[in-house]
Image (cartoon, rainbow, N blue to C red; front, side, top):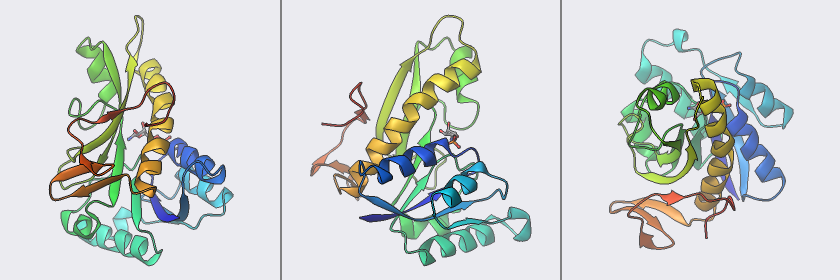
Length: 217
Ligand code: GRF
């Protein structure tokens, strides 16, 4: 069982998907803790409802990002976590705090990276007339939404979509994508080393694509 810490700022629907998957035995994970930068985050409630220790840190209580992240990652380490999943965590991360977690921290981002790093990805895809959009799970590095991508799930952009409709379609694929990737990480099938991502022991040249089965072969 891998001990997973989840960082979340908002609703926590991705967190909930992980909780459900672990409860059903679909991923070999137990939760060391859920951590947030927002005291009111629904994600914290979801964690407590599932019996997972949940902790919020207020950015205003710290002098700067480095101090905040030092405290946050100190608590993550103290929880016994050995894998960190950023699931709707909306703050940039300090490079020094990240360094010890390289290869053990992933993020889900609502776009087919490297397209649309940053915010408002759905509106930007619509503005560009993109035909496909989606979500990616990547290892976190110091570069915003820039680390090596493990896997993606694509959705079509449909006539008449607005940003909310497209976001909802993407969100529906985020959950199985995140569960499938955390499953790979828990099983040790996807690892990051100095050569890049290794999947089942071979270099992963292009991100895995999640198909209709919601599983990777
Ligand atoms: C997701 O779309 C995630 O990709 C983005 O923020 C959203 C979080 O949703 N970064 P939730 O809190 O998991 O419901």
